[in-house]
Length: 265
Image (cartoon, rainbow, N blue to C red):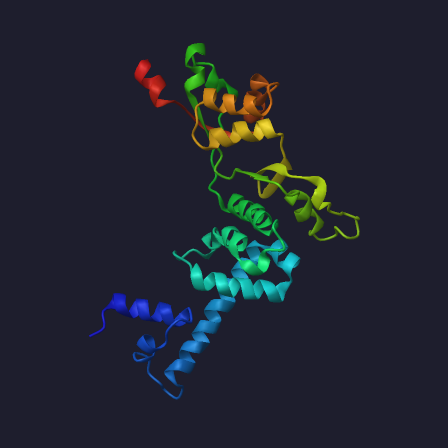
């Protein structure tokens, strides 16, 4: 007798197009061959998941055209099917797939454009969190400041690319042609911050030192280590000014001391 786990395995394999035999043996014909019935469901699965990817990555789709996107999505779905029930979580690894997908080798910026679109999608669905006010720093002793760990808003993503992906994204928005938006791939790279503001998602270019500082904080590094990274990128990095900007923008949502600081207190 087939167990539930075996049934789920066989149906999954059939719906992803790899093997019908196991699942077909358990499907009643009822006027339609089991293989044909599975093909209907398979078509529905691939159509649905392709539409999910197209909704998350519309600029990627526009850059490669809908037909090629469908082909790439088909390959991706077969090797990276959903691992959970929430379809809005599907597609996180699509940028890495595009990086390694041989037919995309002539579009080396495509994976980074996909990362930008995924960051926007992720920001839209991130949980709400109450920001800290600057008064949270008032009780911190100066000698303990370097060990502070600032947790940032969960909607924030920090991206860096050797390509002008923000310009590519903007050039592929509705109305960009009428506005004369163009892209120069020789313009060089960009550092970006993506986050949700109210009901909208904002993307903006930030300075390399600010990017290094905020990346370190997002990685859970203490303030002293984050400052070192920022100064390595730009020796004129203004720590007090950047801390003020962080709180004005409502990015910190948590404040703790590093383990080493706690042990020494």
